[in-house]
Image 1 (tube, rainbow over the protein chains, first blue to last red):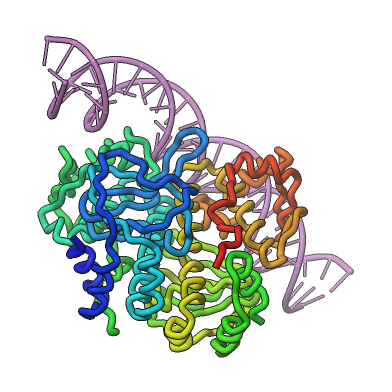
Image 2 (image 1 turned 180 degrees about the vertical axis):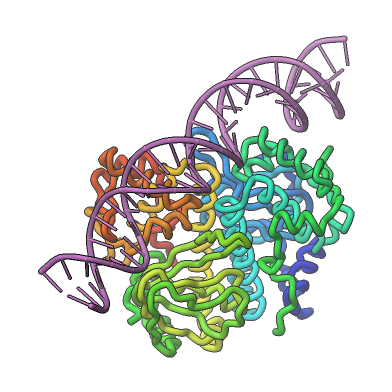
Amino acid sequence: MIDKHLLKLRARDEISADEEAAIAGAMGVVRNFPADKVVIAAGEEVRASTLLIEGMMSRFKDLRGGERQISGLHVAGDFLDLHSFTLKHLDHGILTLTPCRAVQVPHEKLTEITERFPHLTRVYWFSTNLDACIHREWEVSLGRRTGLARTAHLLCELKVRLGLVGLADERGYALPLTQAELGECLGLTPVHVNRMLRELREAGLVEFRSGRVTFLDYRRLQDVAEFDPAYLYLERRPR
Amino acid sequence: MIDKHLLKLRARDEISADEEAAIAGAMGVVRNFPADKVVIAAGEEVRASTLLIEGMMSRFKDLRGGERQISGLHVAGDFLDLHSFTLKHLDHGILTLTPCRAVQVPHEKLTEITERFPHLTRVYWFSTNLDACIHREWEVSLGRRTGLARTAHLLCELKVRLGLVGLADERGYALPLTQAELGECLGLTPVHVNRMLRELREAGLVEFRSGRVTFLDYRRLQDVAEFDPAYLYLERRPR
DNA sequence: CGCTGCTTTGAAGCCCTTCAAACCAGGTGG
DNA sequence: CCACCTGGTTTGAAGGGCTTCAAAGCAGCG
């Protein structure tokens, strides 16, 4: 159940057997969700954090006029609202994009971890800081990259993040999102996303069709995206 | 020296005398910086976090073509690269926007805090999570708000954040940034920032001239910005 | 087999950029 | 004390990237 989560943690730090046991012991109820379901509403009081086992969820905020901005995507193994442990209620909503399976981790268990496992606490703190790194990179995309580069960048980011948990390889990966949802991530209209995807396809860089991303030339894709995975902190840090 | 910092922490949580002493005891060397100086370069190994005492700094990333995106602003009392404690090197640079004074807090001191003060650890963890909340709100601005709303939103955010440490009131606040720097925050060109500021001024909402923001009608400004300070977590949370 | 939701394409328009130049304030030096 | 320089602000005009509006195409499904 927590194997993908551990894969992800261990890609960046050492996790001892004791710590692994503490994590496993913190797991609560497993729940299944259909696609397109708001799992947590913005502002709602939260008493447990959610570890995503399978599927894809997003963080989002809506504006008055109905425009939606997705501020982050989450894949299997992500502790997607670990920040709710310190925030107690979220500034944004959490929405499933696909059918999902997730475990609840009661905040008391996390408090216990902070009291008994300082190193693991730092690992989890790191993990929320990593979310912030991704937010910053998205700010760069939204603020400065063209629609084309922005689209390419997201496809590169997901390749790396899904690759960490064995859900992507050099050929491509499953991406069960609509173009409208991509647009909500990218700050673009569905129409323009469609045009950018066509341009990427016609340039021989990537193809996105029927829920699957297929790389045609990943090297050049990275280049048009100006994608540098450094912000994803893939290196293992000494304890 | 850490009074503004404590003001900010205590606006959101209780800090005991012991914890305050631990914070005070963690302070290291005080340094002064001129304006427009890169204090920390992206990727550089960092062994201390920086608490800003006076002035304004920013987090930024540059693209190949020289475009710069500022992903966050920091004011007096902010622990501006507390996240470097867990990250060990930053994904972005840190730049002074004005002359600044700051204290270094060695990471060993922070490790000690995580080992001896679980509650304070959670407070600091919260603090980096709050940075992420601000990043997310900026993503919404950059992705979905018009230039006008985006500009208005930033001026509202700074009013609240500076207000917390006594540097802003209902009338306005000092904002020693150029329009070009505002543009780097807002994902706009300096020219367009200028036009948006004019529009806000002519609409009787705010005025920004010679380094000072003056509110003409804060209520209506919040309204065009669709500014809701909830994401700044201003309420005091029970221990 | 027709509905539904997603994708694709076209055409027009607008927000923001780009380029260019004038304006203005503050600081420096003759 | 004014001329000059520099960095920032302001304005105009033209252009482009993305949106908006509209409709057709397409796949999956009851």
